[in-house]
Image (cartoon, rainbow, N blue to C red; front, side, top):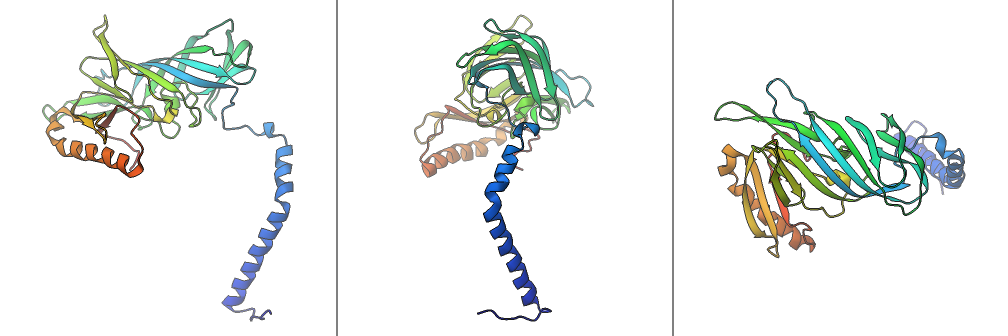
Length: 322
């Protein structure tokens, strides 16, 4: 039974809206298959994909960076860093090119690749951040070449990728500089040429060359640290677990830490909280909360924290989570 509602009433307008919605749902249900087929048949290659091709995927990154923090002009809010990355690759489909991401990075020649392949040209698509390396021959399925890229990156103060931060030390009013990182969602490509998509997980070994006045933190514990002929330190970290590129982390700063060993529900995690040296005495409560939180999360979710350490670093400017 249908009731005729006066055309001028709100109820009538509501009923008409419902009728239109139902009609649209019925039409879409009836025609969805043909619409999808039309777009698929309309040559997908005519529309550029924003996703990387999966012909070549990463297995491991061996990353070296050298940031320059000896900034003498306090009005400057940018610097640069030298970088080198060796990417261990796996070929899943025959291809004569390697496509990866980069942004605000200048790659230096020559680009090296192991085996009998060589690089004949490169192109860059700034709209997609695609760095395309053309080879003299096709790579075959299951080949595992190593690609080496030397480059120079920018340290901006925009809290993306590797970025430049600073604070004014209270004791002498001197501006102190540091490097921090925020790779999520798509800014690992500003730190290194990489396959900057979450599904393309790989392990990382991070090595940082830095002045002795600074300390350095990354995802994993320090493997070793050696003094170089130039007086700088070369600090190498242990290999990470397989992870997405946006989880890569790096801080280079003149901070101090409070540390507690044997944290977590199994007592196998070292937890640290770090900040400007003059604020070290204010970190006790932060350390208490940090150690309690990691145990609470493990208990709540019944999942063990997968690393041997957890660092909390009070960076002056950090956008994530705000």
